[in-house]
Length: 248
Ligand SMILES: NC(=O)c1ccc[n+]([C@@H]2O[C@H](COP(=O)([O-])OP(=O)(O)OC[C@H]3O[C@@H](n4cnc5c(N)ncnc54)[C@H](O)[C@@H]3O)[C@@H](O)[C@H]2O)c1
View 1 (cartoon, helix red, strand yellow):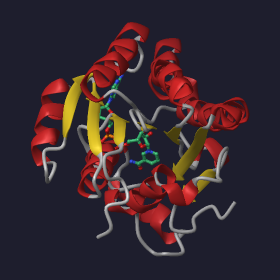
View 2: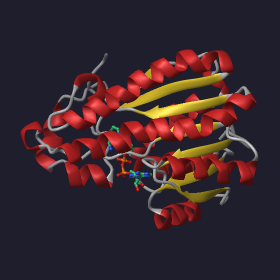
View 3: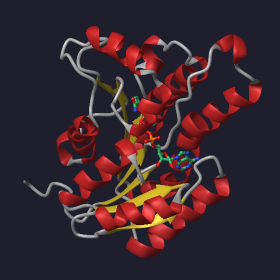
């Protein structure tokens, strides 16, 4: 396997489990030094143990805290002296009908999924500006494009992530920083199994042309591509990985 990420310093927020963990393992296997930045520091430390070359570190980071995100970026700069890419993957997706949704539940999802993306980006941006180089990849969702049942808060947050990606791409491009997003369909993670009843996953799968849910590994290639030189002339893009479910 070609080591396309040799020596790159890549931060993955929410990298301790699920999609973020698989992305971290993959990028590190291809040569990156991976920083697993997660609110669950114990799980993040265990994730670092799983890296094939142990080439990386775990850093505590609550993406809803400005102070924590700034400190996380400082820690990375102190350890490695630069930041080549940031994967804004930390997120949550609790299902709640709008009629039952409280303001606090709304705010919680917006804070983690949207404001968390803003804060982590803000924390690394000044370093990327100085480097005149950097790649930011935001984890959106097809819910941010087509809406999801029980997902008023989540769809709003992920649509916000898509808008943020495009707006920032315009400002960041002239500075040498690329900003892109990935919009997955339903990916079969442990959290997915807790959030969705199995019958609704079966119903959803009937409308997926590729005939199955996504798996965590399905996102590795596209994220790797967006962090590699192969995507150097791309910015403001949202790449959908949903087995053909939406086709938009
Ligand atoms: N699983 C899916 O079907 C699916 C589909 C589309 C998009 N996504 C998006 O992909 C991302 C990962 O999803 P997943 O299924 O792997 O989720 P997951 O629940 O398995 O993992 C989320 C990770 O984020 C961390 N996290 C949560 N709050 C945090 C905070 N405040 N600060 C830092 N870290 C925090 C958790 O500790 C965990 O390690 C999310 O942004 C999610 O919205 C998932």
